[in-house]
Length: 344
Image: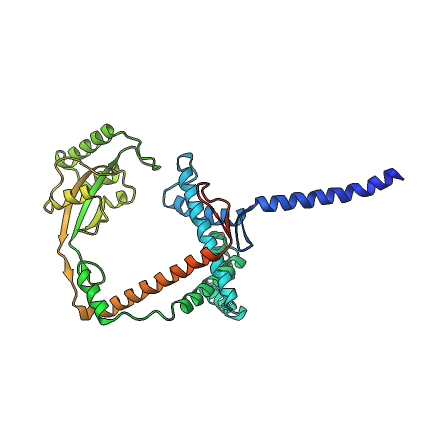
């Protein structure tokens, strides 16, 4: 009798144990909660892996040991974005802004129309590593966010003529009003202590020596600058196009030492010595100088108005999102330990 009782209890006990273990595993699988809604490790990994693959296609491998910290930063950024999207979806649902099923069905049909047949459509989904259900969820999120954005920013006023004129006068050397003086150059970079895949690991002395050898090839041996740049340059972003690079003077988008050296050249001239920047040593050749230009206010008034209105709307929506985050219960389990990631 006792044995029969135990035999009956064991399956029940094992079932309870499996249930409890499953619950524990599910909790361990959660990387963040947003007002009680879980974001799982699988969801995060899928989005992170998709982004890692995109970087890999551009020649930047985040799966290496050297780039582990960068991958972790990317993961943090993606999770933070997922938290924001979940907050927006929850708020849209609260304000009854979730699109109707018929509207999403119509959007899905429009997407399918862009493909020759069903097979090509499914192939595109497979190559993007996205399921049809996930695509549908993304459309719901996009439409919900759009409606929420329009509602939140509906009372943003259009800029006044005075505001437009002020912006015009303060930005005459920038788009859309005009263009600054532009220097078109070719350059070669010889990086110092770079960790970037595909770039030789050199100390300062070795990088300088490599730069001097490359300089000699174009100034003494007469080799084409672009050809040598394709062979020698450590700048993976410009190497394939022969080192071509454009500097907008005064835009503060280029290393100061690099920009100053280019400014001191005449078209066709090459720097006599390697130029040291924050990235390493450069050989620079000035190709062309395009003078600054400015359009009349009447030509750009509408585009300035649209830009100012868009910036005002974006600022208001950003503040709206900040308020959502402040008032939400968010537990980001992957947040740096130095920060308090739990908000109540």
